[in-house]
Image 1 (cartoon, one colour):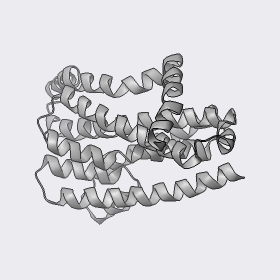
Image 2: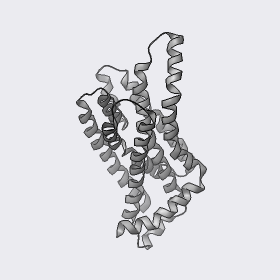
Image 3: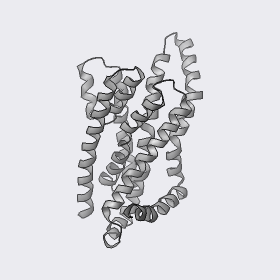
Image 4: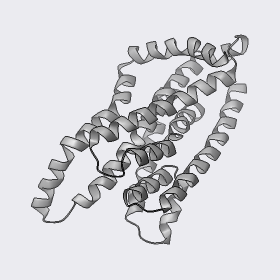
Length: 246
């Protein structure tokens, strides 16, 4: 009953906000656009670069495209929910929840589970549209599950550390720099690569790349990534609750 009450209370509001804000609609559509580019445009560009530079670049295409498809949906969905939470905080909606039948725990459960499920669904569609041969849909599903917690992490980061949308966009730009770090780690073949493990996107990226190579270590990175993201999520939840209470 609590779940149904939460959906009835917040579902229509979220739908109206998404339809009203064109920026939020584009954010949700971006993973699909990247998937279409990965299928029809990037292979052509890489082929022409190989002819011009006379070097092999095709081997890096699944690595880069796979990583982009894997993290784009959870990051974008987390951004959407994070900005909605910022609006609700500015409108004092979170304070009003204290005197409504909907508890704050139900609100957070909806807000954090929604981007996870959306990102999982969009990621599967994106990989299917991109046409990557590896690692196959079952392993893509596992990789998408491993990266789904990035969505609530992004949402809570925005809602906790940004005071308004302007600061939210600045925070997103800062975080985007760290999101590119796993691609740098891929080309580092030494013990220093482990230093990138502090970045949450490193673990699902390593899991996907190992799945693409049919390596058993993929499961280790998958479990480690889920555990690490869970710890970060718990820490952010505590910080967010203190922010709301103050």
